[in-house]
Length: 406
Image (cartoon, rainbow, N blue to C red; front, top):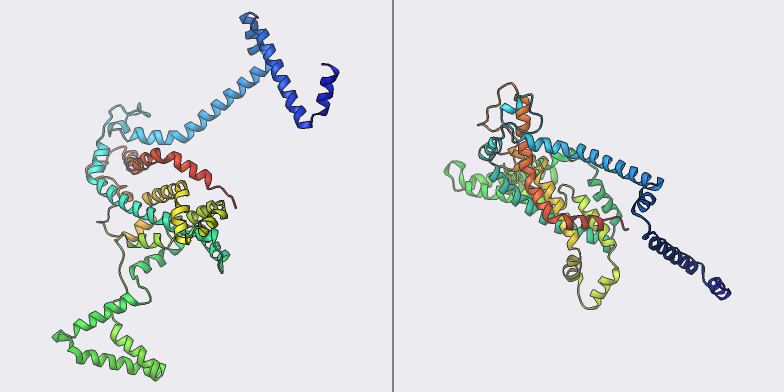
């Protein structure tokens, strides 16, 4: 290397000198490789594989492979055992030579569950309910998360803290309150009052109820009783209200219908809705404010900006929220068991029972019944697995984008 070259290197910056050194090392390595091409095969083999570096690299590779195989076995084996046991016959459970693979494979368990437990009816009902609730929760939680991210209003932090609080409070603590609310559903007494008014009104036309005279007497008594305790004017109003609208009707019974789940989804108090709001808020925190400001300058309002710009660019996150909501609603047994009390309301969690056509009273009753319940679980999970296979790429991308950015 001559003097001029040394001067040129000295004039380079530190970063440029490092880049030059890397380039020189790369060229030297290429020259050594070309020189080794002329060596015999066994000499090249000894230089490449009979080294401490290769032995260490091979040992680490084998260790990682064994570790991954062991972890995969621990995770996958329970599922494999459930799948293989679902094809076993009654004789396989008392045969000590059968460990995993059935000696007399059969589909009787699947056939009995589908025919006797109402699988297809439960599949249809759960599909409709999960689709409706997941769609509503996706849109409602996206709208709420966008509001928490992009707008400033009073008590914003307190309200968001309450949203986070819904992720912490166990659902069992509000089970009785939810049940009573939807068993006697009412909004400021309107439903019960209107129902009682028409009930009392139609009673006036019945001969055994005394007609309008009896209704007028009850209104007069209610006004007189209320006036004594609440004063003349206020007592008259309350007495008139009690005489006209009071009665046995205390609200609407929404049990054994889809309305409790729909109302909870609309108001964002459904299962894991606090988590959905948090995910969407974190995602919208990463959306530049300049994008919305440009839309406002072009004449778009808040709602038009949200529908035309924000929602299309959030398609990946919407799919992720939809998948989470659909999966959790699909396998939910807490809310469905609380709101669907009738035996006619068949959902997929209700099919986990022993079919009447299967005789389980023999030596391996416990193992056989456990295999039947596991088969019910496999039939419940099968549609979710198929759905995940089609949407896994979008879902994984959405999970990556929902990282903490603000």
